[in-house]
Length: 303
Image (cartoon, rainbow, N blue to C red; front, side, top):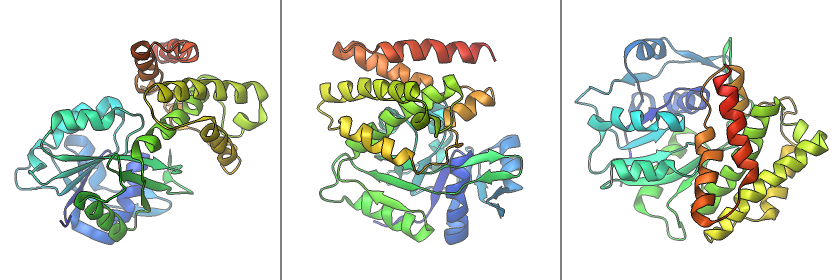
């Protein structure tokens, strides 16, 4: 299997960083999916770390364009619209890759396109931020992806890795992708949400003992849920993340804090909301996320 045409849905800060590499290295084999005013804006280009990126743009109504790989970098609450937008681009061989936060996106893709292969994926370590000058990014991070179990790589995983390598997008196939996405979700549920409430940058999670404790309490709720589902994340993973925090820009902001500051909708339904849902299903108490959900929903309604 070989992947030639790659389509990206979601041209936010993170999508723009990936697009920079695709445009530079595979040219018109790469396209961003958009229409209307958004498409016209994208066609004018965006500045990423001082470099203008002008991708090819294809609209949802275009019948002639078919994608071998479709990558989703939208927010979770835009995924259903994105799945509809790519309908005309999908063939029986199209592979999907989600780089969305949370643990539910791949299930939504499979439900919409049950005959196609949908891979698990996540972006680790990328710190893209939208500024007045464009997109600023000091670390492009790594796309971790694959099937649930990658002990033996499928043809689709091999093909996606080949095209990501060709595009110059740093990537890694994880042996256990379920563990990987839950570990990332644990991080998002804790630091993203607590930063959205407190306004704290990454450095505060180490400098403020009370915030550090709160972070670990929230992560513990996710770890307990994972244990109930036989997913192998533990307190060791929580402490490993804390060590990584020491290498982050202390003033750096999580994506949810940036959303709150810009008065945008957050992904709280896919973080605390999903924790609460899973907790009820498993009979696991989630008091921290119960309260976090109420607080962030209140913040959104007070915009």
